[in-house]
Image (tube, rainbow, N blue to C red):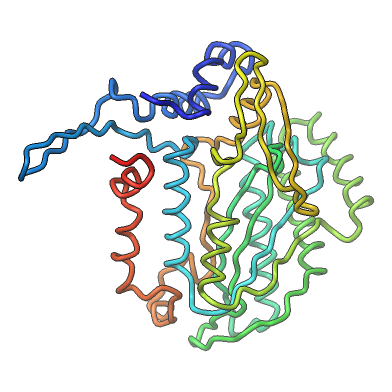
Length: 348
């Protein structure tokens, strides 16, 4: 069995991972799955040709999101599922970020990651509610949590794909061209800091957080930075953004340049976010592993959440014209079946 670079890396450092990194249970479960993905000794399926009698054994895959092979297919599937939800209208892609000083709280207590969803959702809901309180205009929006930056550091932030418009209680659609990012920055900062403070129960940690909260208001007087992409006008552009920003895994095999077993180092590359300059890093293998596994979510934690029109099931909402016509769904889904994906990736 030919293993990919990540499988080799994690096999070579398996005991070191266990005894020096002290991984979470879910991290070890995903590591085990990924290492053994495609191993014939773990079983498979035998296919036979009815005409010539030729037999072909295909090993089972792990289906782990952490696996570079299975995770890539999972990302394509969830990106496709998102596109099926979308209304055929213009959308805006926003990124809700937090200050570096607060990131460690979410790493130490991963339950706090829910606060990012709650804070971002409350800001969007309140912004649209203010536009017309009597009609209760509601947009459709999808929130996706990323915990990684391009260098694979811990950097939790929320990607939001939001419709430029909303539907009222009467079923009337109202187009919205202007988003007040000044309001959104301040509102997100206030909502998130308040939610975190409520969730922290330890007196010592709460006192420490209150000090950092005060510093946050002092140092980020304009609120937390919210980056807004240009309007996504047509369905092809929307689909491209979903695949690139919302559906991508932590790292693809194409970004791993080499694994030097003698020096015990990994060389990988990325385009720097600030200016898209290509950066190549050479780091110890165990440091690379540490960066990767911290982004494995807890079991059953939802990284993608649907809100507003996209999160409810009203009969009136079904009348809205979708980006992808329902009749095309089975055809598009057929391209992302596991059998087709494995055939495309491995040739069997």
